[in-house]
Every structure is written in C-alpha cells, then in structure tokens.
Image (cartoon, rainbow, N blue to C red):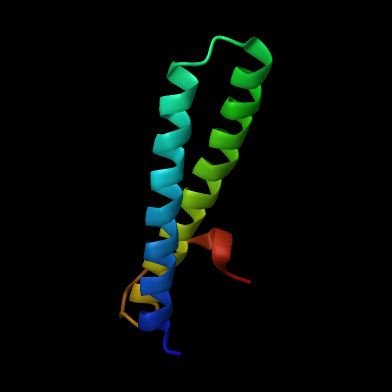
Length: 77
C-alpha cells in the first residue's frame, strides 16, 4: 500500500468519525439526564481528537514526498 492510498483510508476514517460525532451531538441536544450528557460529551471529545489526528495523518501521507512540505512535528521522530 502506498502513502497516497493510505491517506485515502485516513480520510475515510475521519469521515466516519465525523458522522458519529454528529449523531452523538444530536442525541446530546435531546438528552436531559446529566450523567448521560457527561458521558456523551466525553465520548464526543475523544472522537473529535481521533478525527483531528486522522485528518492530520491524511495530510502527512498525501504530502510526504512534496518538496518544501513542513511536516507536523507531532508526527516526526
């Protein structure tokens, strides 16, 4: 698998996470139970982090071989 192909997978993963976040936000808006709201907010926060990282890695994979591309220091050794 090439990095370009891998970037497509990361993008698809980020899109799936985005859909799930939207579903959970919809449920959160209609939930009155404080305990359930807290758990939903925690889950949304975790999924949002995962979505952001998937998008960052997709960009890294897409542009890895581009000249002058300044890689995200978070993902370099």
